[in-house]
Length: 168
Image 1 (cartoon, rainbow, N blue to C red):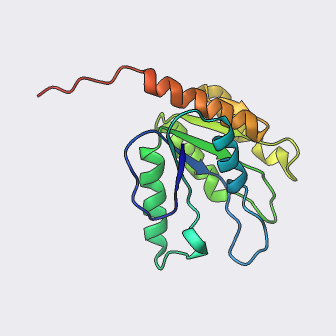
Image 2: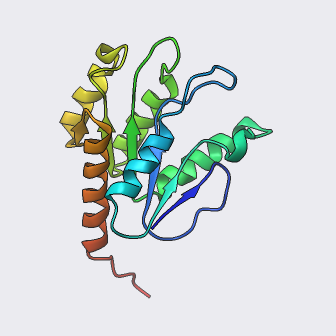
């Protein structure tokens, strides 16, 4: 079962995937890619999973920028896997913040999957991220179904990994 947690909502315990990538500006008329990602996660997932989206429920934006960014940072850190989908379009979905977040998450050793569609308007603008992903052993996919498949493989692997024993 998939449950969706929207920006600035409480994040439950358990396996979670954060949907990282460029967001359309309010009123731009550009459709979000995230509903398709949620649908794909629903189609492929066989267990319980929380999907963390930085988009706001009902389109209600945060009053303070810091509230939004703070929630996103916590959500990415709490996620089992961070799914990066970057349908790069320099005009409508440039993804400048996404570039920084990707580098930050990879540098922190978080479980990350990078999705970079070859059919996006500016695929050449994803080359550096693909290079970094290769250097860091991050799976790279070119379709949303393939990206979701790689994400779910990492979620499954994380569930099977031994939990660290905490000293008392």
